[in-house]
Length: 387
Image (cartoon, rainbow, N blue to C red; front, side, top):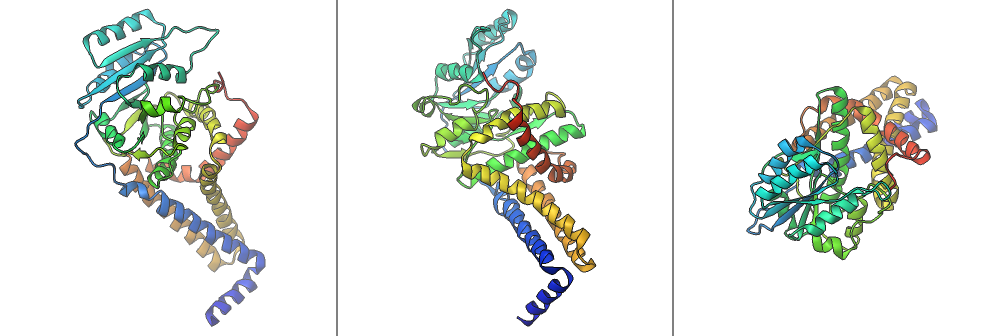
């Protein structure tokens, strides 16, 4: 007690009441960050997927083609059709309206019983959304277990369906991971890291029994669950298939399984630079306002605590006496080392490579651009959001 009294007297004399309050806030914020990264996100590296059992349920994979995509025909579709699994089918809803491309799909379907194509004719007066196109594919599916993916992403392994199908044993929703791939430019690394960091939030939440979303490129649910709950919601918005709809299903008490491994991962192509990334992120983040309050609090608390910790540490380094400046700088370095350690463990589990160099800049800047993005979507309408 005497030592505590002496320490308090020293702090009061050197820092004053405001300095003590700043120091206390910095320490509290440090432990909030510690809880997120070690206690919550740290679950990902040690998480155990559903074990392989005797059950190998049949699976239907649904995806939508918006325009003639011959890269998908030559590189993406063979990976899907070549999956090492007994009972599965690939269902494509073709919105391209291109005769030659449609004929190419028809030829493949004619020679491969696992491949089915449904064509929808576009009408300028009545635009066809992805939700409508996926709905047609799900209706056409022969099997109850549905996996959704997109033409700009492809499985990293021929075991993708086999690994994801394990989740249907005891769960109505299966959540997988989708990484991004592109050029080796630093901007591409930041885009990939942002994608991984956002996935860390919802993957860790699902692993703790509190799922709230997945990713459209790698998510599954049962056909009975889909139609039993009236299909996709928010039909006036061109977003929400992998979050708002999943939250609707979770409200029924449906169990969700998480499958994370190098064989269950898919990779999505990066189509552009930071401008493309920002526009896409801004549009899709409009769904966040419809999230449950506890989810919004969970996400915002990490970003706010990180930003405030940086601000408190910077103020302490500027305002405090030398010995307390060293303490603040040391706490900042300890947190930074902790983030690097945990990010390395997590990215290894997610089969992500080459991201660690971008972590310092992302860690510092992401609260700022998330706040900017929130303000942007509040005052400016995102193109393509509404039907």
